[in-house]
Length: 231
Length: 114
Image 1 (cartoon, one colour):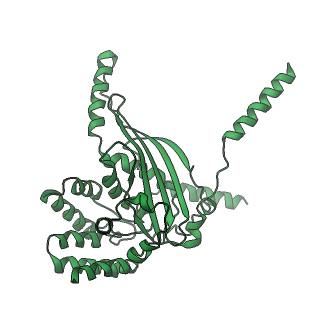
Image 2 (cartoon, one colour; image 1 turned 90 degrees about the vertical axis):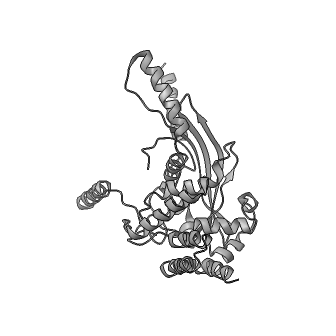
Image 3 (cartoon, chains in turn brown, yellow; image 1 turned 90 degrees about the horizontal axis):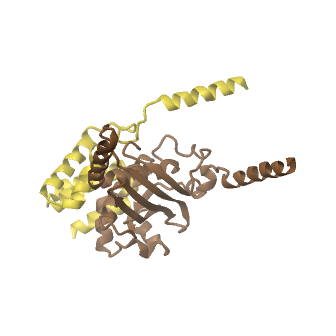
């Protein structure tokens, strides 16, 4: 009996230690960021693989605030969008696996941020927005991926009337459903971007630049439940 | 050793207590840039211009300077409205504040000259 217990304890300890990965520092996880000291970043038009037609252009414009606030020079969004369209380079998927040196010549970019929207679904009854976005930052010089994260995010848009009982429950569901349809696209995008870029190494204009290498990096693939209060 | 622990704890406390300040303030940029992309009409353009002006005039970020791209994108909107000299002036302000934008902005200026 004792033996069995012993095995169970050891076995479960072993299992649980397997599921937790040792955290690694940003200087290890994103070493290209520290080695190349990039300053300028071009936001590539998002690649939309979701069924939400709104997703592409609008997501683009939500990226500049978090990246600029991290200390990078973000190449002017609207101006670069116009040039990419003019040069028939608006489909970023074409460049995901090809040399990026042209973007260095034209835009003076050190980095290119690709985003792939895999999913952007609204559920009215559950008052939730399900989002799956992949972020890939590539070095324009080496074409290496120097930062990437992918988030499976559930955005909670529910609200409560405060009324109890069955009538209250029905009212809450109805109200939440209305709220989901009105949930601002930008609120969901902001929460998603903010959560992802929490561990982005800072750029030259941040006081933390080059001294944040010992901070821990986040998980490459993460699941998160967010709401409008997340900033 | 004890001293180090004490210092690191107090630093941690200080960091967590200080209000979260960003490098830049953006006024209503999130909403107005979205509306501009979505509607692209006179009203949304005007609101975006007002946002640019507020970001420039009432900058409350820790750096105390206009964020990257704001002068240039504001200039671009004015260029589209045929306000060429005002637009150009703003593009040059972008280069003055962020010299790393010179490669791109020079290219735009050349396109306008043509």
